[in-house]
Length: 325
Image 1 (cartoon, helix red, strand yellow):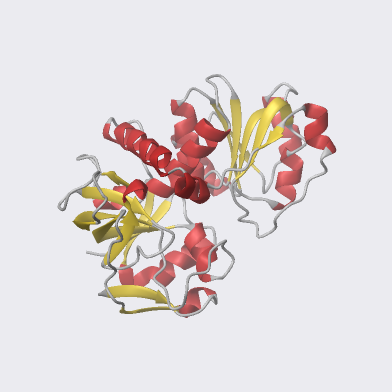
Image 2 (cartoon, helix red, strand yellow):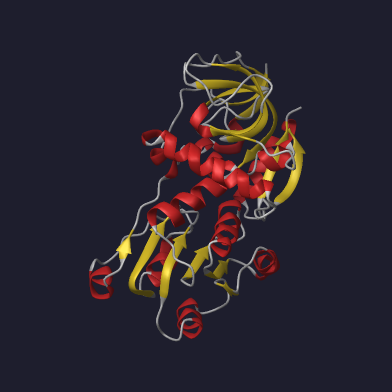
């Protein structure tokens, strides 16, 4: 089958288009004809060797896709051949066929095409797990989202608004202000030119943040750690700055706030039924028109390197999708 191959953990230059053996589903997996696949910052980190997992080389990158079920493992009861699904895996989506655990898959609503379907799972399930399961977000709370114009950031904004929160979006350039407002941000901070500390204090009347959904890391994390409200929840999601921060532990002590980890992939493996229920709920909201994944651009599979480059240079607002079929 035609596939993108990563031949070494050297970044974009290690990618090529070639032939790969067709995968076979395990007992708890489905085999999927991939129609569209979404590319994320996590995919870019993995090909650079900077992600938590390092697959055996060569491997097929890509975590998210949408397509049609071809075959089901013997223990799979959620799906039948012919079902349209959005699916996820640690890798393997940038190919004509992939396997995914049934619990990492969900039926695609009729009003969502494969391009949109490929952009749902990673972003919205991550946002769900962080906000609903880990932070226990309550209507009326104030949440700040960093890296807010990316796929995960926009999903968090949209889901937080749906759940009744007040949302402050933090972005790295003025060009990203309009998209986060479009997705529901009540206020926007451009941390490339504004004083984050002073803006957050002004927007919260000095009280600070109930929840911080933090994608960037580095010095920004340290600033936000000093802006949490009493009983707040600071959630490290990722480190797109490339710097994993450390934190003086007197800060959460003095404000009685929590630092709450939210590694969605590990949760999904440990609690597959919970993950499946969350994905089904999200798909229901997509079907009802309450959630709208933003597609920045659609490229052919042969332009995977261009898609990864766009992600690396921070020019993407939402998701880049590769059309496979």
